Amino acid sequence: MDQTLPELEETITACRRCPRLVLWREQVAREKRRAYRDQEYWGKPVPGFGDPLARLLIVGLAPGAHGSNRTGRMFTGDASGDFLYPALYRAGFASQPQASHRADSLTLHDCFISAVGRCAPPNNKPTRDEIANCLPYLKQEMNLLSNLQGIVTLGSVAFNETLTLLGVKSTSYTFGHGLFYEPGSGLPWLLASYHPSRQNTQTGRLTTDMFDSIWKTVQEKLQ
Image (cartoon, rainbow, N blue to C red):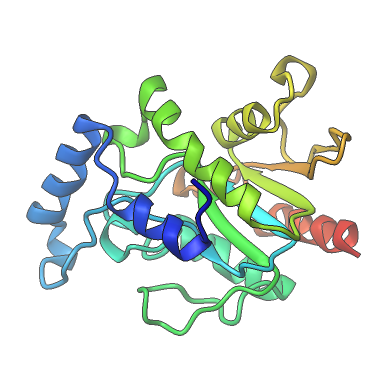
């Protein structure tokens, strides 16, 4: 059944398809991290976020246990978001560089952020079946973004699963930071980036300049 983005958001938020993830996300929301013990955790699947008229879609892996699973918004309240949103702000896609909670006034321009998985997985590793359960939501979001021109994938899992949704054989495409592809046949172009995880940014695998180069390429391609 066709849905609008707000209707799809409600469907995603109510999802309980994966028992392991339901138990984990709700357990984390009850027990909480000590630093956030006075806050109410979201503890539900996290829908996409952004401009419904966006030409750009950003795809990540899944919510963090104490990030999006706490705040209820993609890449909000954790180290990955602390690296992502300032970059989007510098590139003109975000109204502010900070993303701390759902009511912090952050808005996105010409950009929509989503993920392969919508529930925080234990050890940040969803199973193959859990990914399969969630991918239709991402596909629906792609279909509802009527102005979509390009996709930035954050990490190899997001890259490979996006190729699957586009109907492109992943064996023909290699993941690597800054690699750009045009699948053709009316499909959006694809730009790969390392994930802005703390592991990548603190080790220097992904630097600020490297990340900024991704959004500079996006600006050029959208023009």
